[in-house]
Every structure is written in C-alpha cells, then in structure tokens.
Length: 454
Image (cartoon, rainbow, N blue to C red; front, side, top):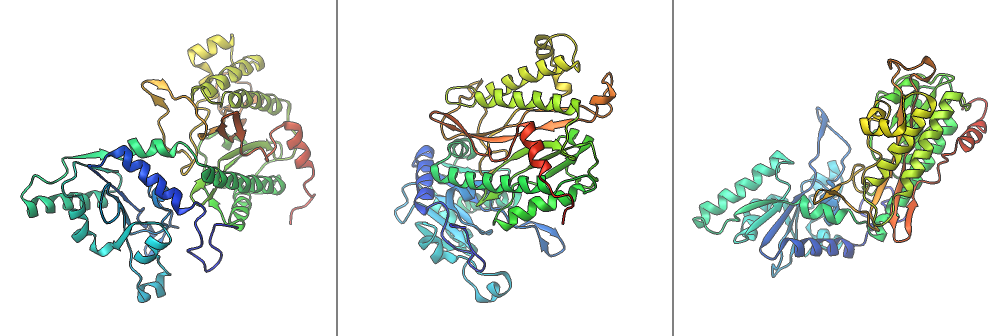
C-alpha cells in the first residue's frame, strides 16, 4: 500500500508530507506565543511481561506533530530559536543496538526525512534542553500523563535554578492539550484520506466476519477473521474488537469473546482498523443464522431509524449533541411503540426512562484516537460542527437478559449500528457506508454464505 513501509522498509515515505507536520508545529507555536516552550514526549515502550513488550504505538499528540515512529524521543518546539524552532531528541544510530532491535532513524534522518530543524541524541537531553528553555515564560506540556517524564521535567527546572540562581526559569506549566487538541479536531485532506482507508479496511473486515460467522462458531474465531483481514491489509485493530453473541451484546464493552454463537441469536461486532495511527470504528448487528425474529427485526428497525435521524443532524452549524437528541427521540418512540416503555415518548425522554435500554451517548470524535480529543462543549454550550470534523454515530438498544417487567421474548437482545461520519461543507459523508445496514441487505448477504465454512 502506498505510503506505508513494505517488509524490511521501516522508514518508507510518510503518508502525510513532512510539510504538513511542519505546518502543524508552526500553527501550535503561534498559538502558544514567542515566550513559550512546548515539550511533547514520545510514548514509552511498555512491557507485557518479563522481557516481552507490547506492540509499540506512538503517542497521538507526538505523532500529530512529528510523524516520528520511535520511543525514547522528545520534541521541543521553541518559537524564535535562531538555530531552528523544531528540535527532536531521539536515539542515535548504533550498529550493536540495531542488530538486536532493528534500525532507528537517528538524528540525521530526523532532519532529512522528518523535517526537524535540529536533532540531538536523547542521551544528551539533560545537558542541552534546560538551556533551550531558559528565559521562557511558560512551558506547555502534558504534565501528569507520564510520571517518568514529569520527574525529568522537574529535574530540568531544578537544574536551571541551581545553575543560574533563579529568575530565568519558566514560571508556569500550561496544559498543552488546551491548544493542541483543538487543532486535531479539524482533519486535513491527508488525514481524511487515511481515515477513508482505515474505514475501507474495517469494512472489508466486517464483511469477511459476516461471511465467516455462523451457529457453532466461537466469538474468538470471528475476532480472528477480523484481525486476519486488517493485518493482511497492513492495518492493525484500532481497539480490541467486540464480538458479542446473544445477550453478551448487552454488555456495552464486552471483551471476553469466548462464547459460542447460537442459532437464533444476534451477533454484535464493534471493530475498527487503524492506518498510520488513524482510526475507524464500525458496529453492525445481525442474526447469526441469517433470519430475523419478529422482536429482533422490530428493535433493529428502531435503531436504524434512530441512526439515520442522527446522521441527518451531522452537518455544519448543528450542535454536536443534536445527533444524540435525535436518536433519543426515535428510540423513545420505538420503545413505546413495541411496549418496552409505558406512556408516551415525551415522558420517556423527560424522565430518562429510555436509558434503561439506551444508556450510552450516540457518538464521539474520531481521528488519531478512537475516542478522539476535542471539547464537546464551548462556553457551556454544545460545540457546533464544522467541516473537517469526524464523528461516530452509534445508537443502540440493549435489553438486559434479566430485565424486570420485560417480556421474555425481548430479553437479551442487544443492537448497535455505528458509522463514521465526516462533516463537509455540503453536509456529511458516511465513510463506512460500504457495510450494509438495511435488514434486507444483511439477510441477503448472509444468505450467500457457503453451507460449510472452510
């Protein structure tokens, strides 16, 4: 796939041009002011057990500003620095280390390939960085996120006071997220291209899972099929997939994925792919045997109508929470219509009675993180949507298997339908539309499954 490293090519061309990363850094520095320093650390490597590490995933903020894929790195943005404003501290090339752990970019490639103005070995940061931030009024950072980095930062401040006698040390630490996360909320063309690719791969994985799932399979087998497709396309899972058969779908964040799929049950799959750190997030629900029961179909159609009403609210100028309010209204009306709620929809909404079956929100920001950064409210009011923002739309109905006062035929039905929706100047684009939602389409697709799986 273009833009990502093939086997043995760890440092292939970036999918997003270095000029875009540089533009982000300049914009952030303008927002921070000339008397500020901004420090962002790479994600540390984390151990799974003994000497086995978890697969490495870069910190989203660090990636957004640099595209640099390694641990043991710190990005310093120093507005007005004569020798270059963007400085990266990173691992130096070392043949002995690389023999065991693979090639690293090194300081030269940090400049030539990643567009940094200057780069130094990470081993020298304690000697070099304190002098770079000397005399600046503020340090923007993620204080409180990584204790080890916090301790190091405080050590640099102590060193400045000891060496200079005070008076030149930055007077305050400022939360970096307040500035940076607002920038990340608006996706560029290059970012949207990656998100479309992540959506396409996730869609392919969902379709493969539909073809594979059938009574007698286990949830983990379906999960393996999802992961097979994602890894086969050069992506990774954006989060641990939820593969929930029957009443397991009523557990909002079900992750066990161990149960057998039963004839007559629904299967809820919530899974997304990640491409170059950009995520997708899709949920679909359908009958394992390909045939809807009356109750399953009735609730599914309520959720589908709620999702469409919510998607219609995803457009410029509408409040973020308008989609949720639209979905709540449709779900409340549907629950009253089938008899799961008594009285009218107005009372169900006002009292919150619908939350017994729809306890979640309808969506979230999407981008470098599945639940992406960005304020949902501004000055106490729901944020207005603008072109470049991407949200998920994921209403659901979840009837607890032990629900009191609920007829047996409804119990244990869990349904969620989720798509990724980009706000455009003209309205919106559903990035994940390749996976069918209509009940007839799903039934027809499931009917094409071979009689026996391989």
